[in-house]
Length: 359
Image 1: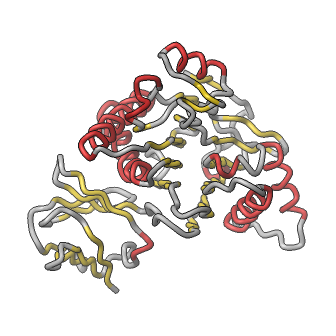
Image 2: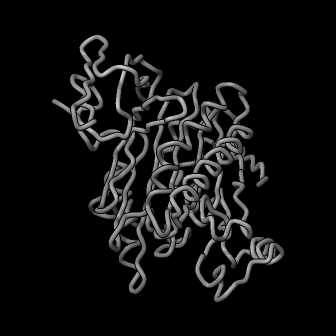
């Protein structure tokens, strides 16, 4: 079976195995291989991957070309297409997307690992274009985790990653004279903790029985601290929108509004307990149709239903369908990632919760 994809890079080269989740290859030869895997560049600058156990279907992988290092990264999850519904099932997580409107501007990233390395979940909600969200889905996790491997400080690595991707996005927008931006919500599971980094109005929660614990704050103009920050910078709010256009107070990109906005993520650290059941990350399109408390009620309803199944994908589809049905007028794209936290809970430890707060 073959996989082909387009890239702007003109040549390829020897590749080496890298630790999960994917492969890393340099770009200096037209044909290369290792063991039974062969990668070949066609005359139209597309690459054909043969005999790889994971990357054998166009919908199973994404790639990123990093011109600075002249490398291509194959990732274990996808950067979804720009339109249409989509879902992905992993060993301990499930992703569901519902597209509304002409373009799917939500993107996401899942980067799994063994328990000794961080596991990454990201939701990115683009506006004006899907391009910025797609860039974040392709690169932000790599910026963060590469820095973490060097310095072993995840909090610092998150801040460095967001700063690096912001600089790249702003430069790209200015060079191409484009408008647009994206929110970014990243939850990184490591060492029995959740590092939640948020910028924008996507939200993540931990579900424990009938209790729901927020891991993020919404950066919009109903948040008084965010409103004060923007107004002090000289931003004008009209109907809770910056200049009457932008509904969020923090984002990646948005060159036209950047002088008024904060582009630093708000980070929270949460200790996973044995009682925690699910981690749920969703773009605002989902939360427009379902509050966190309603989400918990729907989970209970699902468990009592005749069609109850322990498979995470069935619960994920159910929640997204219920949220979509609740929105009658303005429907937005929805992305939900639900994670089984039992896979990450501490074993045989006292059941305690540590909320390290936002910083």
